[in-house]
Amino acid sequence: MIKASRLVLFLTLQLVSLNFGLEASEKIQAIRDDELAGTVEVREYGGESFYSLANMAKALGGRLSWYRISSKAILSLNGHKITFFFNSKKSLIDAKQINLDKATVQAKNDLYVPAGFFVSGKFTSITDCSVQCEEGRTLIVERINNVSYPRIYTDDNLTRMVIEIPDKLPAD
Image (cartoon, rainbow, N blue to C red):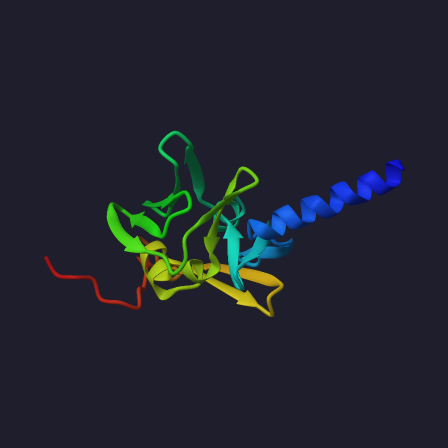
């Protein structure tokens, strides 16, 4: 009798989770600058992939601040602040409003953001971080650096350091 009631409880919980759109999650590896940066939980909602914001903050090397009373989370990354609102398409990048493709999903004390946002060109251009998902199993995070390593030349009484950048700097 106890086994039967546990089975009924388990099946009921499964049906409840399906009714709210919660599907099973999986974890994928995140690699940042050729080193393992942890794992990122991926959930599917309505056929779309969503990444755990807490896991992405760690994988990107950013800082995440939660503001539960105002229902938002702020990801600080490379001098930029990206604000995500709970269960909303609205988002702010440095106080400029953008709309996500799908609304964020709050679940399990975390916020899940559409995966497409992190792999978009807009995210890359703002944060100088490139995110690519390889074969659905690994996230590759690369910081875009436009400054090459310095070359140092030393002569008798002179030391010269050369730093090259691919883009021209704007003239004052």
